[in-house]
Image 1: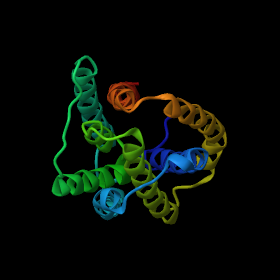
Image 2 (image 1 turned 180 degrees about the vertical axis):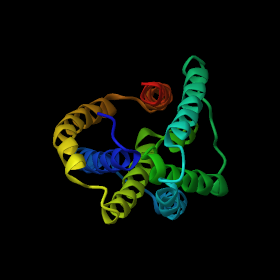
Image 3 (image 1 turned 90 degrees about the vertical axis):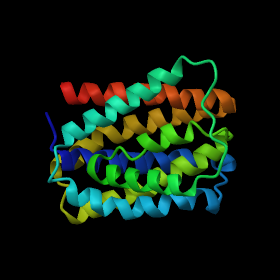
Image 4 (image 1 turned 120 degrees about the vertical axis):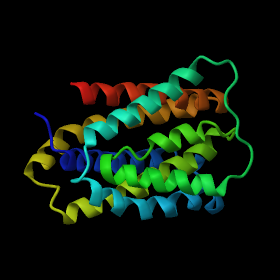
Length: 211
């Protein structure tokens, strides 16, 4: 069964929120976000969400997903096989805000709010805790705003709720496994994993588009 774009975004948004809450609770001792690091992403991201939701019914979601998929595949394939990881050490508040805004719009349109931040943050020579402290609250807050707007649009109908009954348990189990892996990774290996995940995320999106 092929779900309408609005239903797909509603399902993924709620799954990300629930799995994010679970992983936050399990690994709460390692979670120490800094306002100065998180806010430049989150505030523009929240501004972008209503724009994305408004555009959801007016755009070709499959074409947009295809573009995102190719971007992820290109980035992931290029850096996955390089011996030296990319490294951006300078402060880039304007770029951070742009990444947040664009990702907020994408979150509202496609629920893929984490794609651009994953690529951007994997270039930062930060610890895995610092990366997670930006990526996780950003994704959760952006998709919480998305889910809230979609709720008032009536997106959470019987079809979506039935799909959630099946997908929520699977997502929670996968999230728990992800947290256990996260705790065992070094900082450098975690950054490399983010790059590989960009490639896998892109391939997954591409399969959704062509299937």
